[in-house]
Length: 402
Image (cartoon, rainbow, N blue to C red; front, side, top):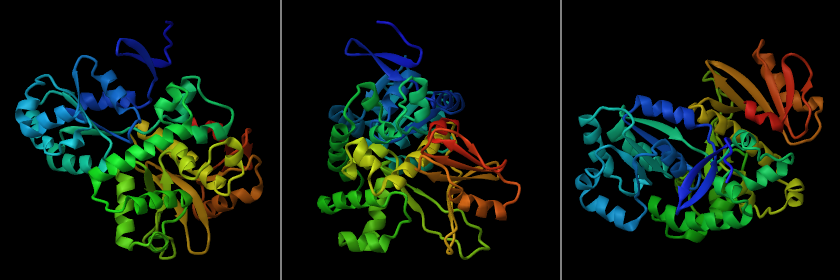
């Protein structure tokens, strides 16, 4: 077998396997050098286990999803942790929430860096426990599915944007060249049957499933909880709780509006996006490039892909904040504002393969009120376009540079 530097290799059941290198690796190593433990959070199947075992090649790996391991950890947590005097990878650690209190004592007694890696696919449970027990002791990383930049570095990118949107970024799909829609069908079933029950006692899984499908039709739109409640037949408090579940388990995220407290006319509702467009397409019943390119929601799906790719790039650099959108009550809008050191780059996103001057209207409005700023249009075509020093357009293929 020939080894390629673009891939990381590991042994599984005696067979040499490969996985695409992750851009977050350097940030993970940095945090391990600064903190006694590292928490890696993200969606199921995003590559947390593989990354953890790569970082801790010489330390023991323990999955708390194994029923016997989970029972042992629950029955005598102190004795369970004493098995790992040099630390370990504790995978899906939210399965035993009280383990964090015991870890606190261990990390207080031994202040050496990089002892444990804790992984989990539930953001809420882990954040709550970390804030109570591991504050100042643990670093925190969010690992999302593969980015276009990571796929490009591995030589796996396609010239066709539709292929990337349909495939999404889950590593197993790319590593094993699987059919995205088939894989997503199993993923959704596993999520509903296992993760949802862990998070909340939902009595009507049918209504919750319809809610997930409804969210897919609202991707890229302002959230209207009252309208969603009417469509499902539940109250707005239930909608709010269900949105929280989807956020906590990394199915969706909410892009918050940028607003100045002095301006009362600015819209203050967040917009809904999916962490993975392959999953989004599956929920919308889109299985082919032809269906995607002609779909009524294609513009919103393209926007979702662009914004999520930028989010992945920022997370991989350890930047978790600083992304907003702008919209006021008179219809002026900018799809994305990227903040860096107090400055904002306005970004407009258009799925069209050709640029026309009307696409820059939102950017012109922003520049009118923020003279001296620069702006960017990302579109579905190939070539860069420059209207002026402040108004630039780039192809979707350049998304890895943002």
